[in-house]
Image 1 (cartoon, rainbow, N blue to C red):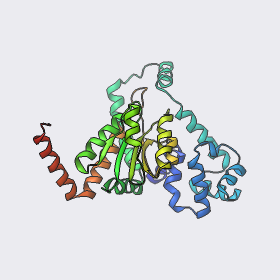
Image 2 (image 1 turned 180 degrees about the vertical axis):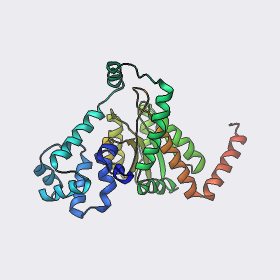
Image 3 (image 1 turned 45 degrees about the vertical axis):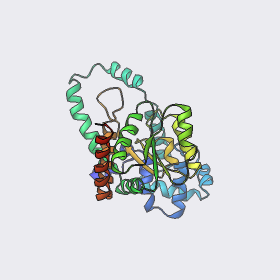
Length: 294
């Protein structure tokens, strides 16, 4: 398989990510099917062809043309890919640990496993990411008239915080959504069209993150989503989706590729802001010195 074939392999990048990647090549009717799938992913694809066609307000042959464009041999093959994804999405650290335990301890040790797994996961994440999605995220983040709020889940909140610390330094008007209910309500009460919400949501997706996305998009805010290759349900509401691989040397999903993706986004943002970022960094350094920061 060539590199280009691997990039478009639904088993490598995920069905939803493949749909988003090929959306620009689709006819208007095929795009309606694609958006219907993404809006209720993956459940919209697990019914009949007729049901999906009715949901998208197109004909059944249009559904099949989209699937052919995506590289599927037919509707059964497409549904099997969705079912395989569902099984992978439900994998927990305990499930992964038990699978490893049944197979016996890997003989090579953690260090060689990490050396083999993590660089490939980072390289694959960056290779899989469409340039257009990265460009769209940078355009949104670079708009200094927009207020940015970031939030994540139990583990991924660390990356929301990490991103906000960078945004504070290079463009300002950025904040981390606090955990306390009163503080969260205060921060979100006036969210609207001049807000951008950056969310981090990975498999075993968290319902509060999806509900947050529903609320803010309902008020006119836009969403940028960091997720895995199976795509959080938030993807149906997000303007930009940035998926990362989670391949790991341990039973836990790795966030190393996500960190690489965040740092790539920051680098691209600094490139776009140019002297504006430099001026902000200089002002921040002066303020830290003036107010006793480090």
